[in-house]
Image (cartoon, rainbow, N blue to C red):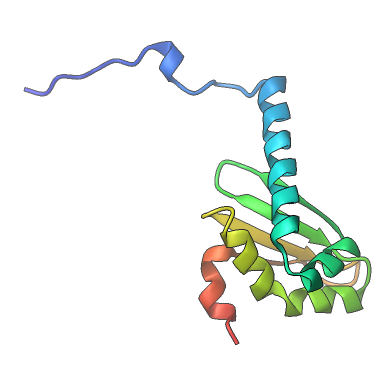
Length: 121
């Protein structure tokens, strides 16, 4: 005979997120962003400095979003995706990178950091 244990409502996740949940998630994203940037090689820091970049989180993964101002920068970032993913992997075990060219200049490129082996030289 199996005994079933009931959980207290206090042990269950909230049914809706609150403002404090959103605030704490945003603080986490900012802190990871700062630590990630500080851990990047200088070449990657320079590339990121020329782009709009930030972290977002959802229930499945943390995503590094990089919006590139022009096609040249976009190609430079794409050429460094392995180094970026390697650095990101030291902060999160499940994560994605989304690299977007300027609007109307192509589709975003997205990869999961667990796909690193595919992108090795």
